[in-house]
Image (cartoon, rainbow, N blue to C red):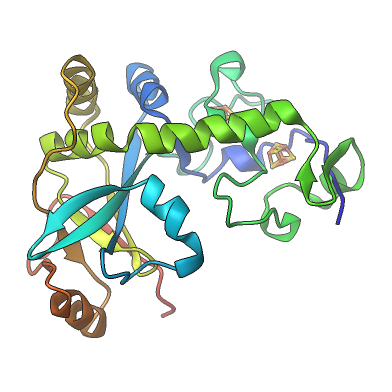
Length: 249
Ligand code: SF4
Ligand code: SF4
């Protein structure tokens, strides 16, 4: 199926969207006075939490860590914490940092995950943006090669930066993950500390922390599966994070 698209500048994608950031973008966000949210999910080496068709993509953007007696693959997202309008959106719905806006802002409404096809129905863009404009997708292929290049860059950054992000998390005391598919753990680190730790890891690259992770899960049934695999489950109430459940209530 073919898709046409033209951004109508409504600004909706700049509201209430936590925008995933590369490491350099996260550092820039901190320098600008913004808040970064850290979202963590993991699957187990035995496949618990891993949709089979996503194995390669999920493995490449994660790092192998220890949890109890088994290995887990942790994926970490640093994102601009946008509750309501983004701090860079002006009163005319224009981006104040347009020339240096994050990669993902340049890519929207396309998806970064290769397993998620573009679905206009779930995007913020209004119907008129899909009715006119140049071809976006023809025969399932993205027309704009520059845009395709940006998506590749974003995916590559995810893979290249996971070790540094895990080391940054260790230095910030971020050690509890959710099980992929069950939810995310979400942290709002102090941004002064966050910036210092990014600089520290940039100067002295670490191949991950080697430290232990524990799982926060949505209920006893999932906890039983995680424990049976040999991994550790958090037993204390969250101190420095929130658990965002993906489970239907
Ligand atoms: S940085 Fe600019 S383009 Fe990106 S969400 Fe904020 S206002 Fe929108
Ligand atoms: S929601 Fe879509 S149409 Fe509106 S500003 Fe964002 S990309 Fe453009």
